[in-house]
Length: 538
Image (cartoon, rainbow, N blue to C red):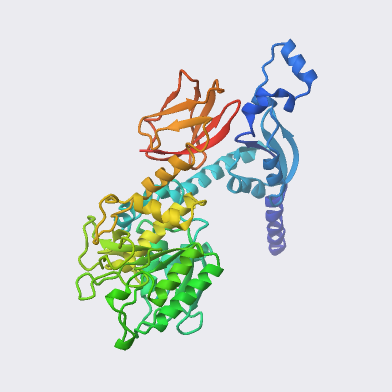
C-alpha cells in the first residue's frame, strides 16, 4: 500500500510542476515612442485623436502598441502560448508551466518582470529574478585571483565589466600538446559551456591532443585565456570558444612544423576562426641546412610567415609571441612574428618593465616589432595537474594579449582585423615613441574601445552629439537645429535603468559623477531621432 501511495505521489509532482499557469509578462520598452506620439495618426484613428483633443487628453506612450517583435519572440518560446496583449500596461498575457514562464526572464532581456495570476507564485518569481541577476553579475565581475595583474595591466578587466568576455568569438590555439585539458577542473567551465569546438593533432594525424606525455605547453597557454577556478584564477577570455590544434613536434625542430602550422591555419579559416594564438616561433633547426638567418626575418621569406600573411588576407588576426632570444646570439623576433600582418607580443614583468629575454625588433623587419607587450615574466598559469603556478616567456604574453583582443573585437564586431590591430597599437603606452624592446608599449584595451566608440557611434550622424567620450563628471548634448528636446535614459550593460533627463538646447548637460567607472548605454529619443550610444565613464 505504501509503495502504491509513493508511486501516486511521484506521479503528482511533475503534474504540479507542468500545470498550466496564466501570467502577465511586463516589457521594458516600446518601439519608436517619441515618433509615434508626435505622429499620432500612425497609432490612432482620427476619430480617437479628435476625441482626445476635445477632452484635453494627452497622447502618450501608453497609446503606442506593444512591440510586435517581442510578441513574436515570446510566441516562439518553449511551452508558451500568448493569449492577449495590452498597450496600456505594455504587457503580454501568457499561458504555460511555471517553469517555462519563469525561464522567459532568463531568455529575453526585454522583459521587465512577470506577475502570475496565482499570486502565491509571485514570491518564487522574485527569487528567480534575483538569482538570475546574481548569475549575470558573476559572468562580468570576476575574482581574478592569481591572474589579476596580467589582465588588469592591459585593462581586460574593464572590458569584462562591460560584459565583453569573449562570447561569440572563436580562437584557434596552435601549440604543443594540451595534456589533461579534457579532464582538468580548470577547464570544466569551458567544457560545460561547449566552448571547446574541436581539436586535432597535425603532427600525429589524430585527435588525441590530451594524453601526449610531453605535451603540456598548450595546456599552460590555454589556461591564461580560458582557465577558471572559482575565486582563484580567471583567464582573460573565459567565454570565448576554442579550437585546439597541435602543430609543434616537441622533441624535434624541423621545417615540417611550419607546414603543420599553415595547415592548421587553413583549417581555422575554414571553421570561421577570428583569432589565432601562436606561442611558437621558428629560426634554426636540428639540421643546420634548414635553418634561417636573421636576414630571412624580413616578413615574407619563411614559409610560416607567408602562411601568416595569407591568414591575415583571409580576415583572421594572428597573435604571435615575439620569442625568447633577447639574451642570445639570435636576439631578434622570429617567424612568423616577423610578418607585418601579425600582432607580435613581447614580454614585460609585473611592473611593466622590459624582460631581457624577450626578442627584439630589427630594421630588417618591414614594420615595428614587437608590436606591443604584455606580462611574460612570472605569468600566472594553471598546470596540467590543476595547480596554479607561474611561468615566464612570450609564450604567455601572447595568449594574454590574444584573449584581450577577442574581448575587444566582441565589442566592435564590425571592425576588420587590421582595424583591431591598429586600435590596440594606438592605445599602447608609447605609441608615439616606439622602440625595439617594447614596440608601441602596453596596450590599454579600454582606451582602444573608447576611441573606437567615440568615432564610430558618437558622431556617425549629426542629429544629436554626445561629448566628451570618455566622460568624467558631466556629459553634454548637442542638438541639431531641428530638435527641440531629447529624452535621455542611461542604462548599464546589463540593461538596468540608472538615470533619466529631459535635454533641451538650453539645458544640455547631465551629471554622471555618481556612476562607477565602466561602459554605459545612453538611449536618446526625440521627434526626429532614436538611437543608443555607448559611453565610457572614467
